[in-house]
Amino acid sequence: MDSIRLLSLWRRLRGSAAGRWLFSYLVGRTAPYSGTLGARVIELAPGRCRLRMRDRRGLRNHLRSLHAIALANVLELASGLAMLTGLPSDARGIVTRIDVHYEKKARGTLTATSDSRAPERVDTSMDHVVEAELHDEAGERVAFARVHWRIGPRPKADA
Image 1 (cartoon, rainbow, N blue to C red):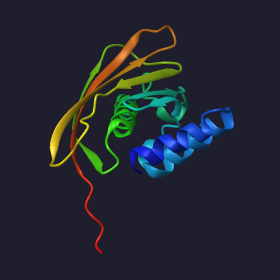
Image 2: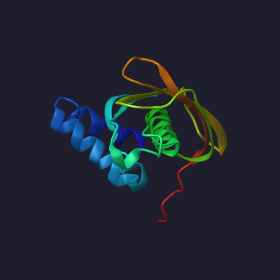
Image 3: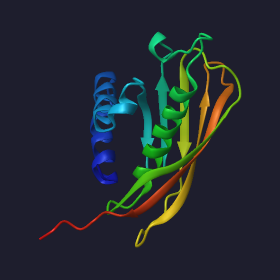
Image 4: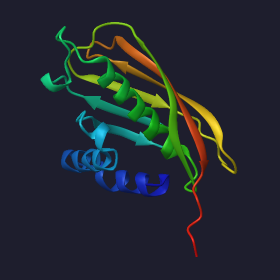
């Protein structure tokens, strides 16, 4: 989904809890693996995303905290939504590397935040790094990531 359609859908649905749930559900259907997190979009604007993820048993590890890969996944999702909403509609991206730093055990509801300054034009493939942070309910940072994206122009449809 391109940035214009993504933001247009968000603007139509963000005004109610049911609309925000539906938008988050549709994002999860578009990226099925990330959809298993149950993360909810709470803010989306060009170059900015905030997600909320509840602590639930299916995301926990043997230490009764949220699993490291679930944290990496929500950080990647936040970075991707922030970056995609800032890209021109004729561009797309794919993750090439994620550097995640875990600072403390993650428990309870978490909020992932990412801000991205995407390039205004994408004429050729380029690398772009987007940072994302994850905070617990007390506002303490539990993890952060630098997500490396390969951005390039969308292929032209065959005539």
